[in-house]
Length: 449
Ligand SMILES: *[C@@H]1O[C@H](CO)[C@@H](O)[C@H](O)[C@H]1NC(C)=O
Ligand SMILES: [Zn+2]
Image (cartoon, rainbow, N blue to C red):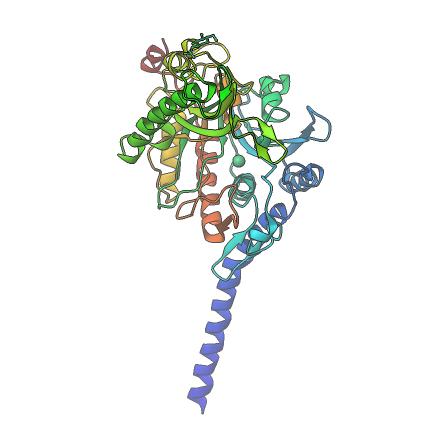
């Protein structure tokens, strides 16, 4: 009787203790997840993002963390929230933790859970537009800072966080104007962290550059003719010769990727995105007429390592040669020469020994129990290019390992355990970056010359 009582007491004590331990583990985690959900639930999808609601949410978070805050509006209705955690030595270049607040639109009916509910399924997957791109990163920065503050950490360098609008539509009213502003100049930024991509393997992806979009339209002209006649130099025939040449080039680049010789971000990709030709009739197209004009559009992505001049020559001489009566236009989205910054200097490498930020990141991630893959070139473009244009190093990193790449896809989701691990990574990175004090050695100054 007595023995039973004692063992029951022990059992009760054990259960109470383990419940308390579980509560200790779970309570802060659930608060962290719920803050992430709140941010995800704000519908900031283009073309009508609720920027004001998102800004108010972020400003409230900043206040709870005692961060300095200001809202910049380069264009009315498009707030950029800028937060600051002052460091003890403001003369050192600062750290910018960058993220964008907008997300791409959704096709509601193709989602298994509503895209702005941030539903957590039994496996812990959080379903929401922006869960990968890139509200996760924005909130992880804040959560990492919450922990660092709670631990009594004090940064040496100034730490800035910016939450910018419009990345998904080109960043012209957000990052582009921000990077050009006096506010930005006065921040004396030394390194920018921006988004990367999820990684299906256990290694995080890290990006040190990105490809520039070149949007090319080629146009052929030729004499019109009867649909039954075989003759040379028609617009269609001339255009098809070009398309064949472009496709051969496309295959040569694609083969390098397929053979594993180059990563996707390291080749020039070319995809035909439209064909415009034919003479419209009320029921479709005139069938017995060869048209006098034909056009094709291509989305080309150029890595910073590519030989830009030779590509331009290729376009002029092989893809749209005047000898074949062709003309071409590189659309308004053609970027500045991608190998140099706004000042015509080679872009600052973010990898390699002359740049400390890459090694610091690698070490910080390892320290937090993560693994980094080899640095890559981002296959699409991000706002980081505006900072790189200013001659700054920028690293693309979204800590999501063991995660399918679902940005811009239906059912975008992120597992909560992976999200929490990402906070550990940023805690370690922010700590390392903000306490790094440069000791310029003779060797590194030689490198710069
Ligand atoms: C280009 O246009 C000219 C003038 O119409 C024509 O004589 C010539 O054959 C065309 N050349 C080709 C390759 O289409
Ligand atoms: Zn993004």
